[in-house]
Amino acid sequence: MATAAFEELVETFAFLDDWEDRYRHVIDLGRAMPPLDDSFKVAALKVDGCASQVWLRPLPGPVFDFQGESDAMIVRGLIAVLHALYSGLPPDQVLQVSAPAELARLGLDAHLSAQRSNGVRAMVARIREVAQADQAGVTVTEG
Image (cartoon, rainbow, N blue to C red; front, top):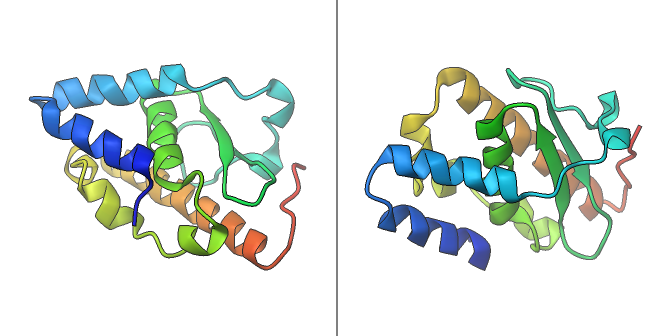
């Protein structure tokens, strides 16, 4: 159960010939994301378990959405991939998404270092935590 944006990303990855092209595409996705205002780079929004600095800021609304930022270009791109996977879904559907299975469709599982894979798992855990809070009617604070 992936969003249309993620399905488009899957199609793009299938079109790209090798992993280096896919890697560049992930970086380009990160570059295209709007920057996170420095006022949101606070401890409450920082994702623990990532080798680089990562912040995810949930956005209020009837569907799940967030902004994100990292000091590493590839991680910023991975945030963009997760944004494509989750944004626009109702919180209960966010919880139904199997991130490992969906990301495997991109081949990311085979091409990320152990540290990057741990970071992706940490980001997915934070996204699920926020979606669970949204579903329970609890607002996640910004610090």
